[in-house]
Length: 331
Image 1 (cartoon, rainbow, N blue to C red):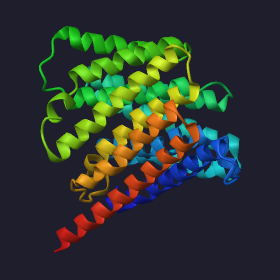
Image 2 (image 1 turned 90 degrees about the horizontal axis):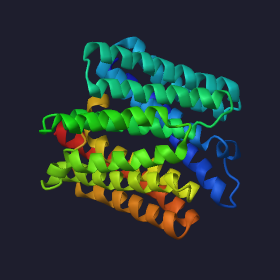
Image 3 (image 1 turned 60 degrees about the vertical axis):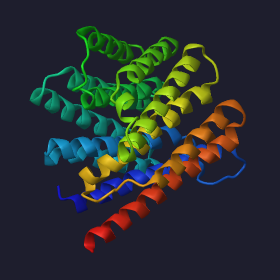
């Protein structure tokens, strides 16, 4: 698929992001905007936005036209949900996850490794979570497993040239297996997420690149900050403390920190645009983590608005950087 045809798929995902963020804010404030998005906050953020972005990235890597059906279904699911067709929207979410699962089977067949097997496990967790939503059951632990396994596998792949003992890879394999089977037991899942955060903090390439400069250091800072919040969220889950704080430590502190860090690398690959490094990228990153700390410790509402502002600032900053990069390339 030509890069210009991928942009509408991303646009579908970002529409769900905007509505999902608005729905989340509407839960915490007296403002009655987008009431339909309030109950759909999780589905819009996880499946309609992140599902679109992650499955689009996988489709680009796979280089198969049929694989783009996954981000298309994920993106359309948000539109259908917001239009009031709940069952149809949830069915599209499940179809998107099923197609994404098949894509990862193909990836595993091409390259049999711990990394690709873990990616397949993450896809299975997303499919399980979306099926749980369709049948009216708890999906959030499965969605957490989806992100933990997917990000963990990608970081394992990107850090593959670092010297590790066989025991280190076995430890990762055991953690991944536990994450896949423990979503029915959130407290146990939380404890394993803490261990995964410790593993990533100890063995990820970010420990090396944080001592560099420019984009490598920025990415590393994003990753290490994300691992901190994964540990916080896992600990809160394990102790059954602060449900909102636990979930947003993971979904905002961990997942969005990964997005902030990887966007300058992924967007050029997906859209063939220049995304040069700029120190201004630290502004939304600092706002994201500062507002999340406020949300977890002092004020859920104010912190949530800060989270939303950080996401909006990152999108605006990234867009300006890409436009500037395109102008420099044209000259």
